[in-house]
Length: 442
Image (cartoon, rainbow, N blue to C red; front, side, top):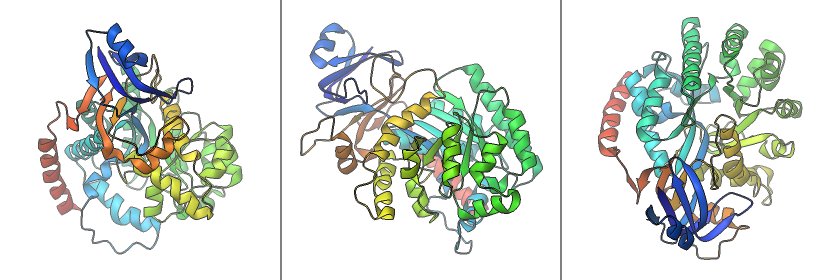
């Protein structure tokens, strides 16, 4: 048994939002009790006590859209012509990079950002993978990396027609095989979704095959939706409708489907997302970096669409997305009063709700019976913290590297900024070696 105490517990539980000098009792992979440090130390006197030393004790962060495979692009020289539109970025960088990856590359391009995530207090990640010349077994390789680190994961393969029918079919098979594996395993640490790239790279024929393949799997789709205006123009030219309309007509939308980005969508399409109770994940840093526009998050929020927050491979630090999500909508709307409530709701409440659509137990909240995903944050506030201002303290006071300790599923993965049972130096050295080879092949 483990006690994490002597800290300010930020529970994210409306019944008891903050506990001063609080303590959490963990047995196995779950929280069995929360209370005052003095009381729980007396009750569980034989348990190991982890002293938070007055720091913040919080639920681990959840990232609902990530691209691990993008890791080896960091620092890479790119000889493609300068991008003038979003499709140039896809063709000149990402669709060149993914073709170079071997299964070993897939493993190391995943395990690196997993380590980075743990060091930034991220305990759950939804990843969207692509490696068209190393598809079969790729999700299982990422799962292997996730197990070695101990990070909660939801994985999918990016089905696409852009590399031909054979590769598209292989992507479908990888998704199906992995989802079946996860369903059989029935472990909240590992789940699968059915990945699709985007409307402009998926024909009706392939989409129909995907719909047939997902039938009976109790899984949803994870798909880029209206990220770039070219995707929308392509959909309207080919099918006479918007992308969300196409997904809706084809049966893609469901409560277990994540429609990523949703930047260029109509009000009618927002209503479709709400009607099907589909999930939308916002990635503000990536959207700004790719110059694709700002998602109408505020409008979707008003309609009651379940909105999550991700990083899209841009970073492993959810606090970066939190900060940029707060300011991008103020900037676009020329209104300093917006996004104060919507963005923290997405990160601290909705990412939890999204994750719980795929697993059996509560997560992202500190209460009895929840999965023990817990972080200690080294923050000594210059002003008082209370339940009404905690989100403001986090927005202006910390980033991911303030995380001192990360516990996932009851297991201490990082303590005092040191990874436990993980040889980071060896992993990163091997990653750099493989990345150099990828750069040569790029």
